[in-house]
Length: 96
Image (cartoon, rainbow, N blue to C red; front, side):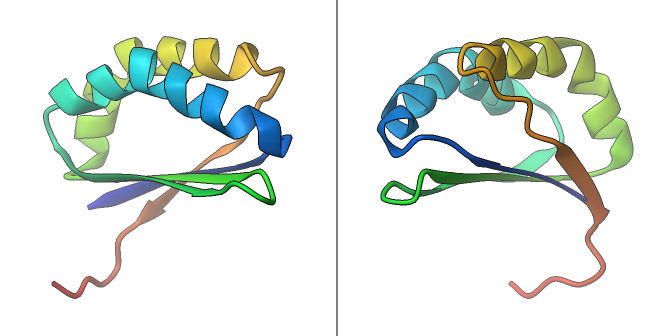
């Protein structure tokens, strides 16, 4: 399994606008993506901190959706003049 993690700090007043834009443009792509097991959007509204975590079946699953997902991700963050890095990890252990 693969985990993709994005962390960004924004102005606290931007959090709801970012969530709304995410739900409109990026979330539908995630919802239809084959191989996406879990997806979380975590926020600290007071601090303006956002973390997005996706757990994918495999690197192949991520590669298959990338041509659709990455442009949507870039559109989202360009609206808010942000360019948060996307970190990719192998899931080495899991507890269910």
